[in-house]
Image (cartoon, rainbow, N blue to C red; front, side):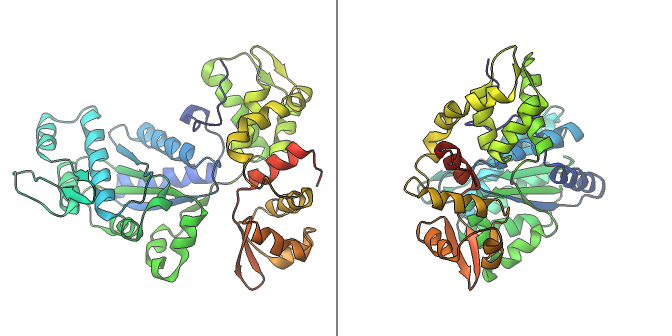
Length: 373
């Protein structure tokens, strides 16, 4: 069985790297349990960088440290406002509580009395514990927290948070600052467009709640790439092994970008084999085919020189950069305007640009075209 699948988030058991993030999670978790202190963390990065995998790893870390903790993961797939978001969070936390071991019968009985929120179209229907009509979903959320105040910590994880509308983003501030009877760890993940919105002046109060706990989920180091290749094999008990040279080859070809690492790993894998650099090289066409459904159409009309320049900019490892930095990396000034027109870059201000397409797109097309940079 091939343990690599770029289309599925890595399991917590096969998660690799992100040590600074996990150390912060442990620290915040300790403060939540010991000092009843709530906190908020923000994860951001390009598509395919492993944000969802990181969220699920955080969930595992929390439950290993505190088995009585509750974790709830929200994944909006359409624009989400305040009422819908609070309703989804309440429902997920209530379901987690019902599944939790060791919950007292009294708490379970009370949980049954707390209604779930039914969202139909744009309306929100809520029934309270005593049967009365409640118009504010936040009341249900506060009711839920009151019932669960014996829980050591509740971790609310919101993935793809760029789908939150203005009111939904406002809820993040409310959750982070509310006086809760049970400590809440709020973990929010999204693309760079989320960071763009939250960096605007009107959203700066929201962003301040994540001060000191913002993590760019980017590429893996060479060592982390080796971990990402080895961990799935250990998870399924495979006898396949990667030589250190093969790991180095994967890292060189993918620049440690998690999605492309998985594509190349899936293409290279053979059961009970010792995988060497020659195997990695031979698997490149298959790896490109695996990733084509997403990356083929991205920058497909770019010239070879466009892609070479794209790679140089991607190698800066900076979502935003100054034109002078790009020029020092070998990027002709004229190509900054050219890539901006193609939607690969965005001009932020005079002499400052932002990389809008994921770096993995550059690496994919460079591999496919056999380009050297």
